[in-house]
Length: 349
Image (tube, rainbow, N blue to C red; front, side, top):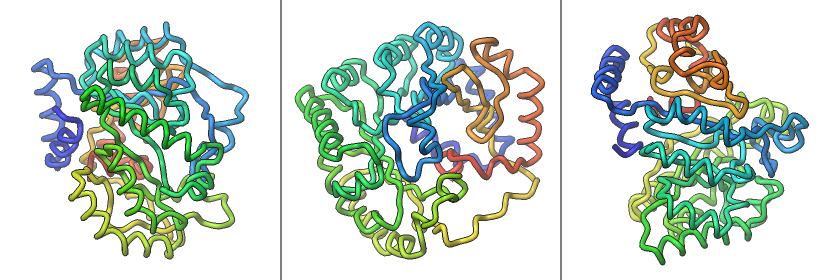
């Protein structure tokens, strides 16, 4: 099943009881259901102005890379039950020396959908050929402007010409080999300086085979964003986004691009919404998803706490542990952690 179809099915099942019943039925039928997000390292090679990891991600002294042996150990436990694997969450995976071997390892375990997010600064020809050869499902490129100066002011340390050359080469190799994968998804962070550029950006990346576009606002709770003296997304940028959104929808429809976006975005001028009060919670993502850090730390969902370590315990042991069960109980009761979840817009709608 296409991962985006799975998201639509999940959103269609609005009740937690129905969602959990469907999940149990799928697992009893031997269907892979787990959605895994996994970081192989804990640092980056550029410094994006809206990134909550900010300076720490490029200069941190406690740099860590998951070894290939550790990856394969976790893979043997987790991947036979995994439907979707995203091999990056907050950091740049292409600076991991054995990233290509991790991709090949995931493919050997038969994971149906394999994806990773990258700034594409290290997307060389060898890796591009490997992605096609291994039939990796998707590459998610983080890019935010069709104009070099704006692009480089947002993704500090990246060169627009290098990124575009790398993405163009991948598109050309796919054409030469008549390959449909990896599909190209682009994540675009909307702010004042680039909101008006979205239509031109779509035209540029549509020519490179962009299949999915996500337009995401600057997260107002990120500490890096909060600490800035000048907000990145004000009402001016939000108004510009509203103005171009009809054109964005028309362009994506005409160019056959799946659009993941809201028609309106909150500016940083607005007061952040108060955390949701405790009450019925129809989210079952902690039973469906998990996050794994480069040191093996395990969290049952993006907004949840670390409840174990996959280098010390198995997935089953962690899911049955007191920490995990306590968290799952709090989710059923209505947990304010859910307001920090970046998956809810994709999976819950």
